Length: 101
Image (cartoon, rainbow, N blue to C red; front, side, top):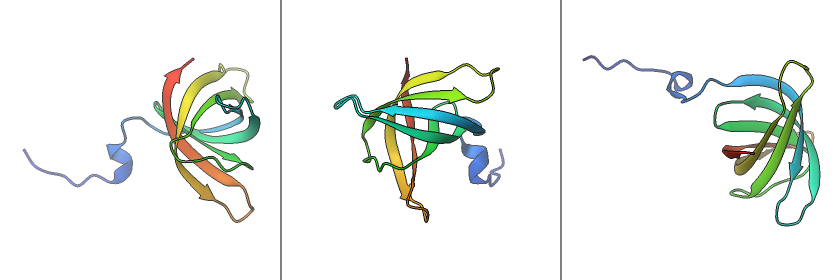
């Protein structure tokens, strides 16, 4: 069996889909609600842009509603794995979907 170098994208468990959708983010501990824009979604994760900075390992409830009526909304428990501050002062937040609600 030969060993073939695969680029990182081929090693992903799920394909990443680019999604232009509104995200409503609720912090379960406080009930605070924030808004964001989803940029991509995979079988076990999501990345969105928001004005609020969330903490690594913070659990959030996310409700993703596509602007395309063909796609059903997604409600999930989400855990933050990466936060990057963007040049425009917003935050790119990525993480893992722990549970579909």
